[in-house]
Length: 335
Image 1 (cartoon, one colour):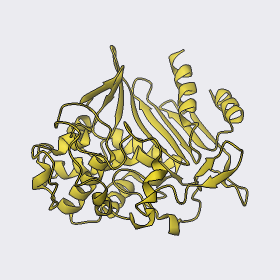
Image 2 (spheres, rainbow, N blue to C red; image 1 turned 45 degrees about the horizontal axis):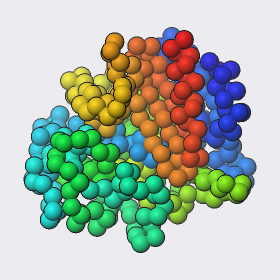
Image 3 (cartoon, helix red, strand yellow; image 1 turned 90 degrees about the vertical axis):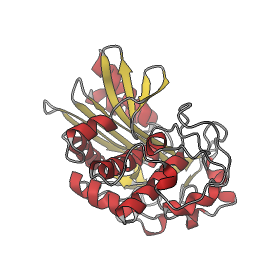
């Protein structure tokens, strides 16, 4: 397996860090490319990478922890949880709808209509978007896209609202809550929600490669600080620790972990969605739990394969490549 991954790294100029671990002691760790191209600082195992929407699972876990503590319900109506007016929205939207992307609400970046995430910041300066509430003007006055529960529609705005729910119920800023109740409990001591204007040491710049061979960083391409819909920074070893903590019920008890990882919504083919997590379900059962994130200059895939007890992480600081790494791993697993 390691030889195939090394070959793929070289062939595709993969930039980032890969880790594959299993219960029998297999441990493949590879890093390549540059965290800082200008100064030729290489990516390493302890490099911090953005993971874009991969951290929606952190938000879902935060909500589930509050439900487990009896402070919230998955069937609670959105209108009863936060003090924000949505003049054109259905009053039957629940926390469950938001978690499963079935709320029918409008999105601030609708992937069914738009394909250029950077275009959002032409009218809304990215440097003002530091907390979930800062995103509200981008979508709260728009009409519904459909009825709650009607269909799966991947929705970033829904997870912004879940971040506001975490803040309202817990009394903490969203990022502080995740740091205390998820990162610290899982031993993810190198991970966090960092501002682009105050990045800590060992953080990889995200790079956007142009067709003419030039490149630029994603500094002006994303909100200045990540939050409940995406934008955390992690190290690959921290993601291994995260999966271990989740699977071994260190973040949620067994019943709530099972609830979180239930395939509630069928997206297409063998792909389902739970609470903040993608699930591959075949006739023989669930074969993969999966996180992924795509942003300009960010590409992330991480998965747990329950049958083989394999944990996989691919963090990349360019816009593509991690999915191909996962494909190679799955070819090895399935053959």
